[in-house]
Each structure stands twice: as C-alpha cells, then as structure tokens.
Image (cartoon, rainbow, N blue to C red):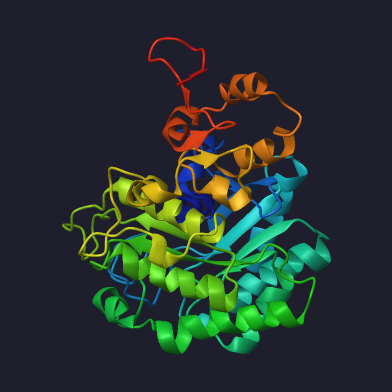
Length: 380
C-alpha cells in the first residue's frame, strides 16, 4: 500500500464529523476515489470536503486502543511538509477537496512533529495562498507557544481528551496527561482565541473514545459541560470504542453504537437546546437510556410542562418538545401568526418528526392527532 493510502487509512479514527452526518459519508471500497473525502459541517452551516490524513503514523505513545501506538506491528511512513502540501494543492486545484484535516502520530519528539504539521499549513497559507478550511490536531506534549502558533494558522484546532479525566486515562495510556497537559492546551487555545478576534474562526474541539476505560456517560458529559461553559469549546465528538486487532484492548467488547448516538443527542440538548446537565436523565450507574432519546426521557419525567401551546410558546419552550428541533421551532415562530389552524396542521404534516411531537402539543387549545393509516391530521 502506498504512503498516502496508509496515512489516509490511519486517519479514519480521528473524528471531524458525527454520527448525525453518517448518511453524507458514502465511503467506497476504492481508496483512490472517495474514501478519503469526508464532509464536515462548519459552524456557519457550510459543508467542506476534507482530505483527512495523518502526517506520520510513527508514534511514541502507548495508547491501548490506538491503531498506530508504538507497540503495533505496522508499516511506518511519514510525509515531508512540502510533499503533503503539494498533494493537497493538487487535489484542491482539481476540485476534489476544499479543506484539510491534518493529524499525526508523535514521531520521536512531539515538538518536532508538531512543527512539521505547522510548516505544512504555513506552506499552504503563505506559499500556495490557500485561504480555505484547515483543521489541525494539537499533539500532546507540545509547548503552549507552539499551540499559539498553530491557532494563528488553522481554521479549527482540536485537542483530544479521549476520556473524562486522568483516572481513566491512566488505564489506557502511560504517557498522556489531561490535567497538566491537554486541559492546559485547551485553556490556552480559549484564551488566545478570545484575545485575538478573527483567528480560529471555526473554533476548537475535542474527542472522546466512548467506553474505552469504563467511564460513564455522566462523567463524559460532565467534562464536556465544563468545557462548554468555562472555555467556550466549540463542540465535542464521540466515537464508540471498537477493538482493533493487535492492540492490548483487542479482546474488549465493542461499545454499543447507540451509546454514541445518545451522547450526541444529549450534547445537542446542552449546546443548542438550552438544557442543563442536571436536567438529563441517567440511570444509577450514570448512563443514558439506550431505548429513549434524552429529550423524550425528560418529557416523560415532566408531564407538568405539557402540552405546549405552539401558537404561544417561545423558541426554547418549543425545543423542549420531542420531535421539534431548531428548524421546526423557527418555522413555527415565523409563520404561526399568519397561518390558520388548518394551515398549521397541513404544513406540519411535512415535518418528519411530527408523530413524536403530537402527544406533547396543542394548536390554539386543541390536541392534534394523526390516524395510524391516514395522512390527514385532525383534532381530538
């Protein structure tokens, strides 16, 4: 397998999009065509087609879940900064990609490896005058000065925590630290972004490997909630642990993929819907329900909040209704004064999550209902 194929294949474990975008990622078996093109949804709603690649698959770290850890028996290869910059520019000029997601293993010294990543982005910006999207992974162990330099060149950066705290990290890595290293970097990124308007316009992120160290959903979301509130983290990504042959955790059972879905849903409630962590429902072990989404769980526990009269409710009251998201809520707010009850009912038929919302709403004091076999809506 060629160098670029190896480093593209190895990059698949770094997330730049979530399970909610999975339908957009139609990866073919032909690595030469579309497997390496990943869509990412930017904060402004635009999508970019990313070349997602590692700079090097050499690594000095011993993460027990990782496909490129130092103990793995794999072919090791690296780019040079000029080489990777030329590859990207060629793909960009051909219209195949319009953004770059660049990560790497730690080849020898983390500072030296990070310098090579930064040099690659510098070449794109200064030599090739690329002004588009670059997501740059910050490596563990690099200096804060190097972090600041990366922030000034990239559109978005990420520092992957992988687990909620050092207690769990020690179960899967002997070299990384959250408290004295990774969180310190996230804090510096936040401070730098706040003090220098115009840089890092697409924010900064982190990632968790869900279930890798027996951590609970509550512990993950507790950490994420603090990052959102205290550091203004742009968002978190979640990847259900899947064992990789050859790693120390190859015999560990995979994490249920629905757990990943529930974490994304809970994250959205906190980040976009005005919910607090305390309002989410966890079992006595700290896990979200796998059978009900977090908003539905909240609704079932708070019957006093319903029904919501959609002709009077504000934006965040509408968001509390199962089946109503921001798009539907904005449509209701925009049109409810001008439309008759019949027109509202007729329009709501075209929103796919309507059936879930019906038990929780009234329209001008009446409860709508949809028969099991007919498409017409009527009142009860």
